[in-house]
Image (cartoon, rainbow, N blue to C red; front, top):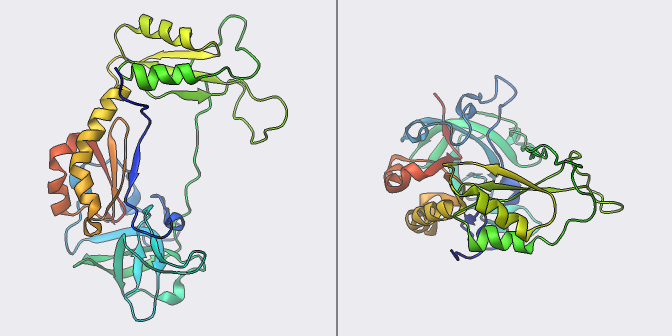
Length: 305
């Protein structure tokens, strides 16, 4: 089954000059009761039903992000979109396309990094601020380095990792319907960042979903002579299943991403396709109805209950 080299896919709306990396935030708990509370961020993306995330005009919402203040323009609150800020590279931003205008924001309380945690009433596309505080800290990525298989007789092999091109071709190009995404793990613990000296031992985790897992395992071992951990996951979505779901969602999401007014700025594949957006309005929720069972909505502005 030749489907091209499949990988977890992230599609983002890019509008011009340079990336909005400085605006990236993720839900977390604010620290002070005087600041906006953690009520709207208690549920991570995907743990709530879509109906719980829908924001209607007049609802109270909360988010953390960058505030852009330019004389003569409305103060702007930026979503963590990998889009663009208008401005000079290396200089202060002048506006952001993915976000909302602010009313009642106290610029004297804005930290030197230009970010804040805000709560207020969303009405007519404007956030009327009722409370503000320090922005949430950016999350630190974590990884599971552990091998989910016992070591084989004689232990894991030492030495440089063999050429894995054949393994990748098998999994991603030839039989994506048999496998899930490859993972690299480290039996000796989390590797350091140094490239000097002996490199840590690595183990490829190959997750098989096809019923004929013996044939799928033989194919893997014929293509790769290094350390392999086989995990059998009957009923799980294969790479091919994930790709089909992603294509169905793209048919609905791509037109939304072409118009910044919809606020949909990122799509990433997986067992459920994650759609990131400024706010999940009732209108946007209705437009996503044809693929609702395939997606996890990840709105930036969350309703406070």
